[in-house]
Amino acid sequence: MSTITRHTPFGVADPFEATDPLDQLFRGFFRPVETAKRSPQLRMDVKEDANGYCVYIDIPGVNKDEIQVSIDGNTVSISAEVKKKTEQKEGESILRSERYLGRVSRSFALENEIDESASSARYQDGVLELILPKKVAEAAKRLTIQ
Image (tube, rainbow, N blue to C red; front, side, top):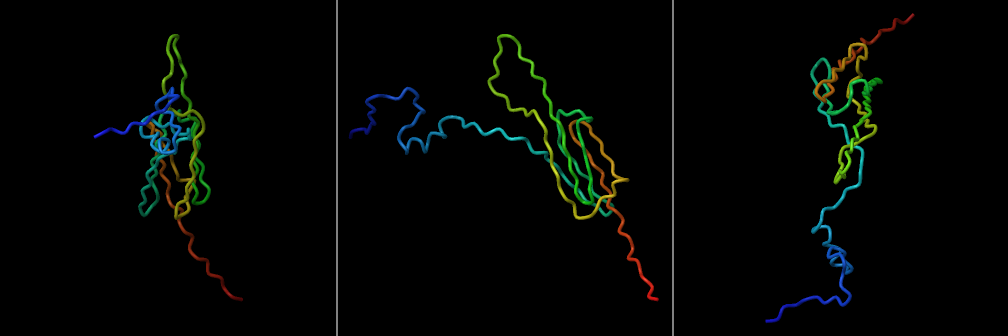
């Protein structure tokens, strides 16, 4: 039995450089594919109890002075400035850099309004902890008819 082989008279300099549409379809399986650079998301956990919310947000490598938290009714907004030191020694070359440099932010809405005056924030070991008590609902005011 004979073996089928593909003949390319001019050859291809890069074996991964596909010219045939079928070859282009499978090209990504044979070498790593670079993804577009995007700003990272702030990952968080939100817990609720009868008194309020507790939010944990991962913001590693940020100075606590660079984090801003604002509360408007039931909407919470967090932003931070991510900085990294770029130190390159002579004779070194960067092969891959995946760490992000820039501004990250996230906003989310909660079911109940937040009591801003009783809220607190703590940043430790790259995790921002927000304690957000629910605002006490005012009792319905009864009007007297004259």
